[in-house]
Image (cartoon, rainbow, N blue to C red; front, side, top):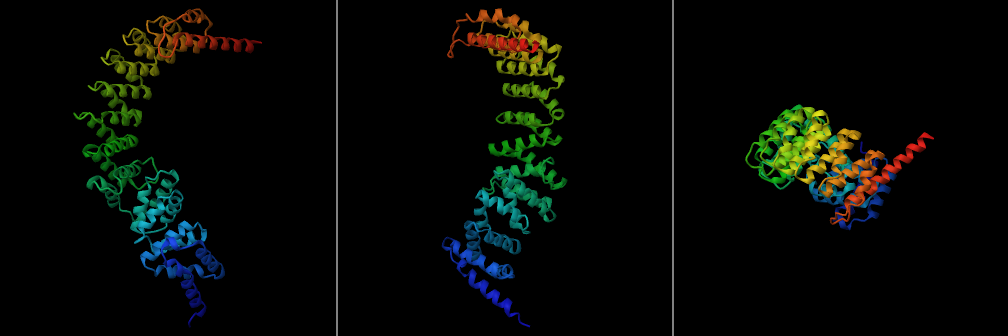
Length: 430
């Protein structure tokens, strides 16, 4: 039996969709309003419209998708979403990539692609893992997680690695590195499985070892630092043994991000590097980790030939603290370089607190204005009225630099802080 009502709805759908076969720029919001009216008037209107749209050629659908998104009509966008879910993305990628370049379009389309089960939608979702918006990246991750049953780990990782191996221009190799990082780091969501994680990490390691493009290699180094596995640490440490020191600093910075216990031995070894920048960065990292096992090695750096290295070692020792550190910091107050003595003042105040007062008073009479200024600042922070006489003596300090009278100005501020803390203590006793 022929369903004449259904045939009538289908003919109406063809009539209402006719204007959408024109170029997207010629389609107006009024055309979309006619479709909305059609959907409201017929209960089976959506199905009829989808059947008609699925029979169109790619170029006609391309025009419909572009116009649907630009119209801003919710019903039109919903119809476009259902069309993609039913038909797939084949032949429409160019238009979809155009929509993805729009921030709102990326948020909308990424959610839609999660429900589309074909290779093109998977590729687009992989591309959106590197989007600037966190919300879009999370939506792409969720979408790929839904696709995971049809994703072969080997092919998935191979697809991402292709720009690195073949040096293709699209997708950008840096984007591929960041996507591989998301898959290899099991602390990130979604979890694509151990096999995919292992393969992605292997690609990143090979990228660090063999990549010639500095920016790509730098991103791979940073990714291994974030992952922090034993294999990642071993790769980074091995790279520091190479004669090419152009990216050694990037490697040290990456090691700083790794779990402290995994990176400790590697960083201790780097304190003996021939590169002063690496010794400096390693000392900074060891101070941040805070493991007392580093004290002995850091004390050796106080005799380093490079002042920046000595300065970083002093600051790291100040963060570590302890009796052995006190002796080292006293030695640093006698360093020939003023910048090291300035750092020693900061380290003493940080590690000893009130007990550093006597040593800071001695630094208040240092030959360098910068050291006297630093000592005055920290003495004011301690708030002991007993140091007032020393600070008042510094008010007569007439040594100038490009900023005026740094010592006198700092001494004046410290005296003000001491008076303020004394007034607060008096009020508290009332």
